Image 1 (cartoon, rainbow, N blue to C red):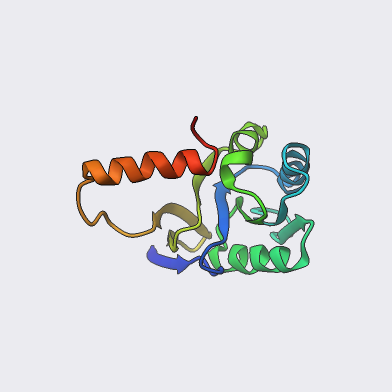
Image 2 (image 1 turned 90 degrees about the horizontal axis):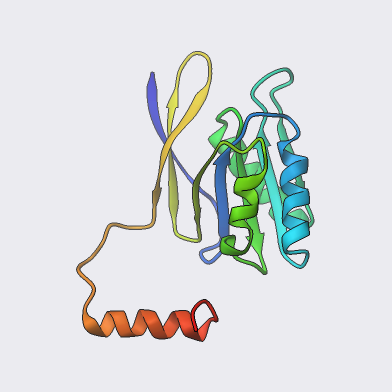
Length: 160
């Protein structure tokens, strides 16, 4: 077995969701779930089929994001993994809906941070072991940091 690290390729501020599923219709069901919850979101989905033709399946409503999702899914190349690249929306608005798609078994991350996917590769294929999301903490939050966090969340409408 070999351990690998694959960096997600994306613009600095772009959000994405990385997950695992179990069936070929995942790509279509994810598409339908996203457009039902946030029809104005631009997105692309890449899904690594784990049997039969073992293709990277894709869907979406933005060619640039579809291409980026397919590129990242191909780089990860772990069976039944999927990645959703998005613009004009945030993972928070679709994450619970994605989790409710019947064939979705796990969400590894939903972030805009620089991300590395930790993989195990065997003779059979690849598996996602986990992710490195962003950087390690640089210190402990101060009272001033708490006030800034609270103000920020209210300024973007996530808290009253």
